[in-house]
Image 1: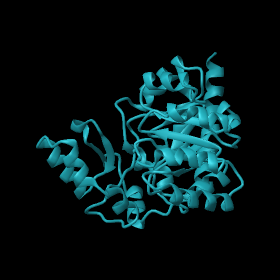
Image 2: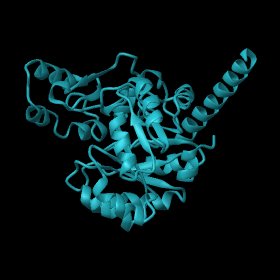
Image 3: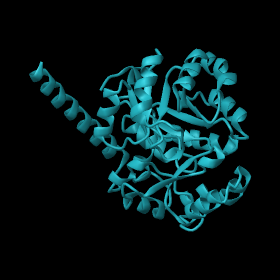
Image 4: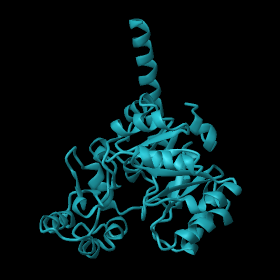
Length: 316
């Protein structure tokens, strides 16, 4: 499965693990990288030295490339941008903002820069400022989302930029990988599938909710505030829906949901936790190792693409 992304990132398989706050730690990132993908450590809203410890721990667990995800709205974004240089990080992915102010520094230190985007306009802007690739994330994804679906977003980005495109949102199987490649992507990013991995250190309640999820187990809150988030249905989500119907503002939502992701990932608190997950959770039915997950996705995708090539060859 050699693509421009495997060559760019020096990885075996074109599969990137999503940078999920309170989830993507050194254990998960190193496991994904050791399995041939690209693991990411999520900076989230953590301070610099906390993230440094995770990076150094990951370096002891893998000699493969791994990356750092920086949420640009974090109060520690500037510190984490410097940290990427100090720790000689291979790849930085970014979200929730424009990384332009850091691009020159990262490029001068041979760091590959891959922003997450939710529109063609954002992708073109990231290409213009020097990004090496972009992750186009459809609204099937868990967590903060945009408007477009992966099926609609990816081919439109592919047509408009020259840099490689990575597809994200609604991908948790080999079928999804094959579909992403057919849309023109050179790689995929998966978050929800890795929630149900043995190396993921989230609370068992969180994993249980993902594994038991159906096709209609997720919902989106916060659309009226301009900050939509996809989560598994829970008491907190129901409260958010009620508040939204009452036309609550963003500040009220922030107050209600403050600390809710930690409550889910660390404490497994069903009442106050925000269990972020994508729509594809309905096909995640078991907890596996990262190695098993990636090998299954790759082998299935390869078989599908080979079979389809033979079918279309016969038609031709």
